Image (cartoon, rainbow, N blue to C red; front, top):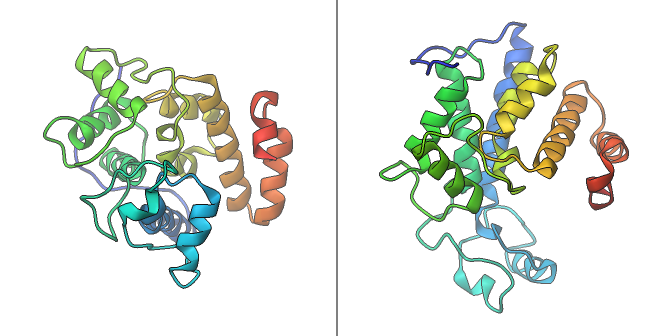
Length: 232
């Protein structure tokens, strides 16, 4: 069983350069999420191209505008938000960082689940649309189902909060088990587990100075058959 952690300092062994790498990776992930808010859940490639062209050919920090979603090209969920705010997935990453910081850099399931409820549950800090696995996880936690607390779904909450786990544990002998534990907090679908493994492999290659294009090609080739075609 796990005991929720109290506030503490986030600790990583290693040189200052490693600490800077960890900090910069997590800040970069949060900034990337913030910068994508204006195009979030916009699925039509042609519409995205039109919107970006009208934004000085810049795909980042696009102003939130319901008109971009006209014609059933996506789902407009952020009318109450403004540029500079996190999406639901950025919030999921943020709560994982906060939880691991409180647990001295360790993944603690009970702590993550408590932060999840404090963020997305009734009266939580996040206000806005939540997707199916987030809602299902909250229902499971409310009913006492904690191991795992996730549901049979393959959507993005499985991946969005994994970066700090990968950074902290990618050299750990039980890394695969730890990664699966982190994913199944919200998602138990096999595709979610497979994509999580691919994401972990990709980030680990990049941390080891593999060039991005090479890393992408390598993980696509090594991915399970069920998801390999989509990655290529």
